[in-house]
Image (cartoon, rainbow, N blue to C red):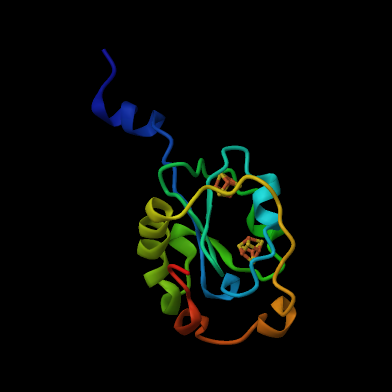
Length: 123
Ligand code: SF4
Ligand code: SF4
């Protein structure tokens, strides 16, 4: 019989990745191309990851030109609200499975602070 302790050791802890502030208005979608489970959902000027779909493969953060993707337990202190926001908006927005051209002004927005003020939930 396997003890609860051993079972705990055998269970792999899957932690979702989270898209944060610097994706807003940049939305390059390079991340979408590498996700093996199509875990990204698209809003008007932001992408989110569904925590229900993400398998913690770690492929997308390095693809993001805006350095906007973090593992859930590494989300910066001032970006913590994005953990809940990713989960909620993934329920609201459509899944995105193909790379799209970024907004024409994406570079100008890269690195601008507190872009959450410009987040568009619905058009
Ligand atoms: S690559 Fe980065 S900036 Fe582009 S959509 Fe994905 S998370 Fe957003
Ligand atoms: S960590 Fe992997 S599964 Fe999760 S969103 Fe990124 S590419 Fe997709």
